[in-house]
Image (cartoon, rainbow, N blue to C red; front, side, top):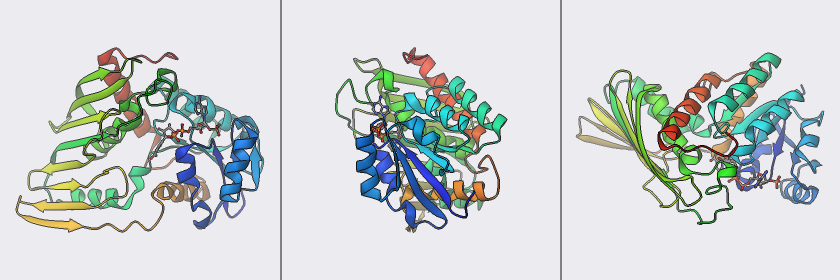
Length: 327
Ligand SMILES: NC(=O)c1ccc[n+]([C@@H]2O[C@H](COP(=O)([O-])OP(=O)(O)OC[C@H]3O[C@@H](n4cnc5c(N)ncnc54)[C@H](OP(=O)(O)O)[C@@H]3O)[C@@H](O)[C@H]2O)c1
């Protein structure tokens, strides 16, 4: 592997654009290749970001010998197939959230990476953001006492188009696995996996969850409740309440954001958390660190965490009878 980590981007959609912006400015990082289903789109994207190597198929990108790690940013329904192809070609993989459609798919991809000793991580960027590290530090320092209740909401009004990835079941549509996953991941970070799950959803005419309400009881009795939506613009904030205070994570809680700490319900401190990088790039630094250290897994965003979260998402969907066509 060369001194710089050589990145390839698989697909050219919205998040791929955000991810590519400024990537080359990171230390030891080169954006060397992009792959798209069409060479025209690959060229347009490559011209915009000065990417030297452009591929008119994902397969061709996966075979590119000058690429070390591939970032997968296709719709959820393609993650398993794309990740398996990249791993088969010996590439390290950073795969967008949700990692796959369900836990069985996730297990298959993880098994291949582990057998081959290749690096693999879910692109759960939130886990690496400075304000979330600050939240973890406040909790670890005991400033709010023992955390007891987490509340969160996450949702946006999406275009009511049955063919887009938000409403189309063939692309893994629905609010839970697209954005509810941020609340599930935050709950996991604060309390660990849920011991008990209750949930309700309203399904769209296309059969995916357009709005949900989910509650967890965790092992020591702590509670999580959150709501997700693709119909409404929700408050998009989160509050962690402990027996000595609370942490309010300002909207959007899963993006770079600020926090307000209240101790004993009295003193209130607004904490501006500096986030100098493109928020999508903190996870890139972690991937680079792992690759340079010869590690095949991140200890911050572990593959076991991904499996736990996928398992929880599956359990919730089962409560509504929501099965995707590929399941
Ligand atoms: N971390 C975050 O903050 C964040 C934010 C948004 C989305 N995401 C995740 O990133 C993934 C992509 O989301 P996005 O919003 O970027 O989607 P998008 O704008 O629809 O882009 C998806 C891209 O995937 C490729 N693609 C392959 N098969 C496709 C198909 N059947 N239909 C449509 N596109 C297809 C296309 O690229 P080519 O034409 O070049 O092949 C397309 O541009 C999702 O899994 C989502 O959960 C993460």
